[in-house]
Length: 385
Image (cartoon, rainbow, N blue to C red; front, side, top):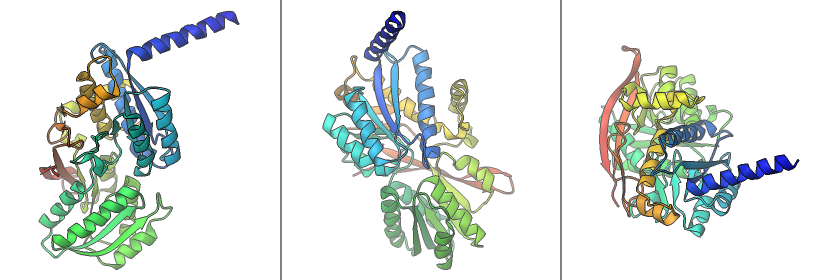
C-alpha cells in the first residue's frame, strides 16, 4: 500500500511539474450530444496538431497542455467547465467549440477572470468584429453577416430571373439573428423574401418546415445553421418535389456531403479550401491526423488544424512564463500564414479579433465531370467597423 502511495505521489508530482512547464489551455466543447459531429472533429484535429508541435519540442521549449471538457452544447455545463478551467487548471487561454447558446456563461466567466476567450469551430460572434470585445477572439471559418453578404452576392450574380428567396435556420441565437439579417439584406439587393422557417435544434422531421418553404415557391433557398438543419431541410424539399437552387454554409461535412447528394443545384459557400482543391498543406494534414489515428474523415479536420496553427503562432509570440495578459497581448497583433487553407492570412488587431479580410469560395457537384467543382474562386470582403 505504501509503495502505491509513493508511486501515486510521484505521478502527481511529475504531472504538476509538467503543468508548471506547459502552456495550459482550457477547452469547453460539444464532444458528445447532437452537435458533436460539428465540433468534436475540430478539437480532435487541434489536439493532433498540437501533439505534433509538442513532438518537435513544443513552443519556445515548452509543451502545450490541452484540458478538454465536454459540455454537450448545454449552457449550464459550459459555465461549470469554464469555472473549473479558470479556477482549478489556471488556463492562460479559454476556448469554446460549441453552440452559441453556451457563449454567454463562458463570456461572463472569462471576463470575471480577465482571460482571453477563443472560439474555434464555434461561430464567430459579432463581439469579435471591430470594434472587438477586448477578450473575445475567433478564427472559425464562418462569421455572421459577412457570410450572408457573400452568399446573397453569389445568388444575385448567378440569377438571370428575379430572385424569390426562402430562408431556413435552426432556433439558436446566432443562426436566427443571421437569417433575419439575410432577409433584410435580400430586400436591398432587389430580391423578394417569400418564406422563413426556423426549426428546433434538431428537429425530428424537417418535412413541415420544407412544406411551408415549398408552398411559398422560392427559386432559391438560403440556410445558415448547423449542418444537420441545412442539409435535412434541403433533402426534405427535394422529397417534396421542389426543383429550385439551394445555397448554404460549407461546414466540416460539406465536402463528403456534396459527393453523397450529387445535386448540381446544391451549393456550399465557405472560406476553408476543400481537399478537392488539393492545396499542398493538405498532405501535412493527412499525415499528422493519420498518425493521431483520428476517427473522422480527413475532410472534417481543416478547421481544427487552423485552430492549432493559430494557437502555435499566438504562443510563439508570448514571452515565458505565459500569463493570460501576455497571451492577450500576442493575440492583439497576430498574423498567421494559413498556407493556402484560406484565401489569405488570418490577421488580428487590437480592434479586430475576427480577421481583417474574409475570403469566400463556392462549390457544387458537377454531374458532367462527376466531381465537386468550384463555381466561384476566392472573393474577398474587407472586415471593417
